[in-house]
Image 1: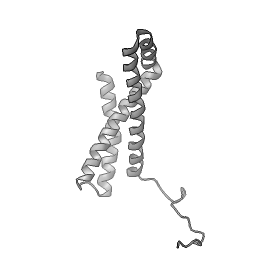
Image 2: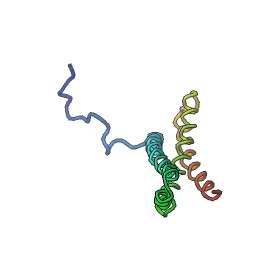
Image 3: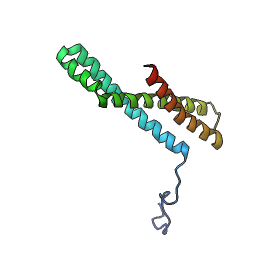
Image 4: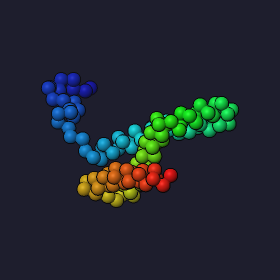
Length: 127
């Protein structure tokens, strides 16, 4: 049976004690971008379905996707796609047993963050 009376010590790291690390923040960001990419994929599917339904319905969907808000969502989706791709490559490196020491893992985290911004800017300039 579990010891119910553990004293006054915290059961888990508290915000005043725990300092978030780059590797944990990038891991959380990978999950967030994966879910955000699902939302943007649904918007693209909606756009394709509207195109196959009728010209009027396509005008509504196309008006939303090509509006300033739609452009902002799609640009953020490009950023999420690049980040998620680079983070996936980082995990493949880790799964191979390489770059598991803290300094190299932090360098890979910064490479994912900076690389995704640079690749997003290049993609938006080219497209």
